[in-house]
Length: 114
Image (cartoon, rainbow, N blue to C red; front, side, top):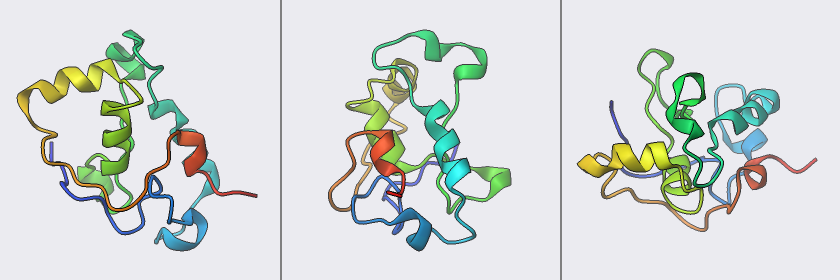
């Protein structure tokens, strides 16, 4: 799996990003809201099984070769406490990730304000 090291310019996890303005390629608020499925219940092991194992792909990745969103990775490895992702991280694949600027604390904060 390819892993980008630095957060992209219009990552929705950045407080400075206005998703419906900054995210290129036809931003869709419904698709963004549906990404809630990629957020693990903190400290739950339910995310380790089958269908629940999902990632938020970077919007700059190609649909055929998606790679994880750096903002999502940082959140899920930290305050999101995604146990399955932390287990994957043991081999160092997510080391040296770099965010740019202030980050949202929750997934809900990444959604555009109506």
